[in-house]
Length: 193
Image 1: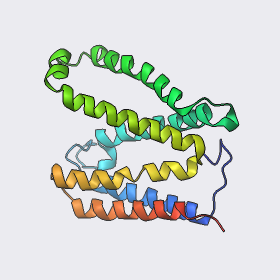
Image 2: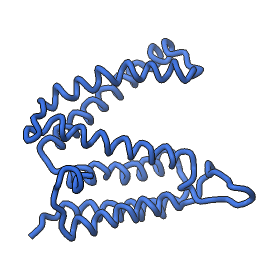
Image 3: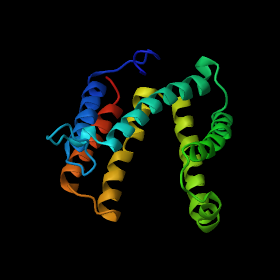
């Protein structure tokens, strides 16, 4: 989207790095999943699992949000201060989050969750707000085609955390795919000559 909508220039390293990113993600999605959707008698790849489809929707929504961040904060487009933009996002996100809980009729006792786990929720809120502000700030001063892939190094961290703390299966294959993604990110960050 950065190339087509924002008219950002890309070179051969960015193209190759993007290809490695997509290849790494495809490898992670090919790993079998216990949540795969079955079509008839055949089992399918984890690409067709509910978590993978939800992640794809998140990727699409995130791409739209990246464009909104760039237009909303870059001075070239008449944007506002990134900190104010972040605060505006949270003013909308917090009530929406509570509405999602109540409209989906989640069987949650929100008050007990908030009182029993308030330190953890407070920590998550601070980390989320800081991450959001830093990414919006990065998009406001940098190229979307360079910032987005760099932020996606979270995949490498996710694979490491998933294997270490949650003992997820097929860790070696996922780690190799994450390394491909990391190499792709490094290639994207190489400045054009």
